[in-house]
Length: 470
Image (cartoon, rainbow, N blue to C red; front, top):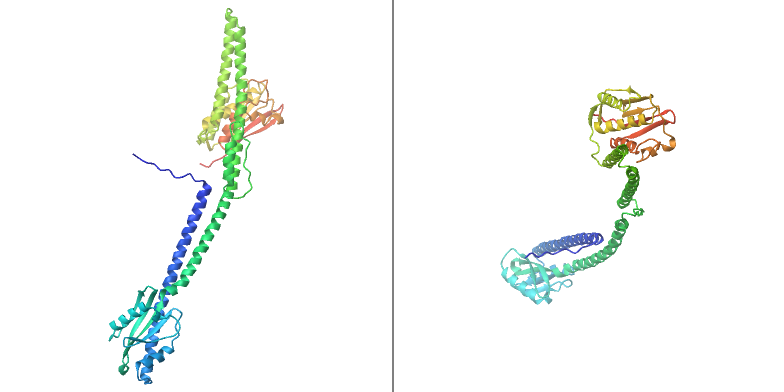
């Protein structure tokens, strides 16, 4: 049997604050431990250094005093030497004559008051009797912890004794402990303040994300008007701007698709209505009438088929793989286009106005489709017998054009003809998808379609896109 445990679902705000607090606590603990350890080691080193200095100074002064011959017994000599010592608050001194504690220095640590310490020192004095080297040790009693140095004394005919200096380690550490306690209290206060501040700041920083979630929840298939309020100039503000831009694009696409569906529905309903009306009025006993209705129905179905193909092509234009560019010889390409356009209409004169030898990066099939569409439009809107020219030039941009001497396009209709189902002349047959397809192909090549037209004198449609070095 497998048991599964799930972690609680924490908000981003909670996770951020928790991470900040954990990092802060870890840092404060590391700093505290490091500070305490360094200071404790410093105190230990200072005690050891002070014990060593005390032993050296006593040894030097006792030897000097003995050699001066001022005293005739060890007790008086030790009293004189110890009277020159000024102990620290946690430092104590004891002079031994034989194994008996004879002198202590007033002030500082009262070593005699700790009987356990004095018992330990008495045993060590006896153990070191007759030896030249002393010792430094740390001992613990029920009262405190001490660090002491004990030095045997042998001064000729004055006899033997010992000199002991001890430091109360706990007293030395008390100040450090108090300091560390203050540090812990200050750290806890800092953590509490940091928690409150980080909670407020994290909430403020995450407000755009919260608004993003609320805005996204308000958006549905019929309402895309909700937007984020941008009031910062940081990364979150940039995210809000990007999100609003995305919604603008989605709304634009959504509106475009709705318009496309409306227009497509209208265009498709027209041939259906025509076919249905003729079928209802058709005399099934009249072979000529049946044949005429059949011809009309096939024509309308072909128009619906072309319309569906064009709509599918425009839908594919939104995909990144709509065009696949590869190197193409510009000269043979435009020659091939010229051969194809002459088959569109035998009632017009066709001219290859410009030809150039160069290598260009295009989707040959899509660009051929675009040029054929422009040539078909030119033939459709130009009087019979007029000249239609095509050409291609290459400099920093590649330019392909079709020029006619037809009816032209008024300035009011120029933007409309590149929209889906937009037509410059509604009396001419067509669904109005040809030029939007050309514009989509040009855009997929990183370019555009320029129009230079004078009503009554003709138009020049020019596909322009960057020339890529190959």
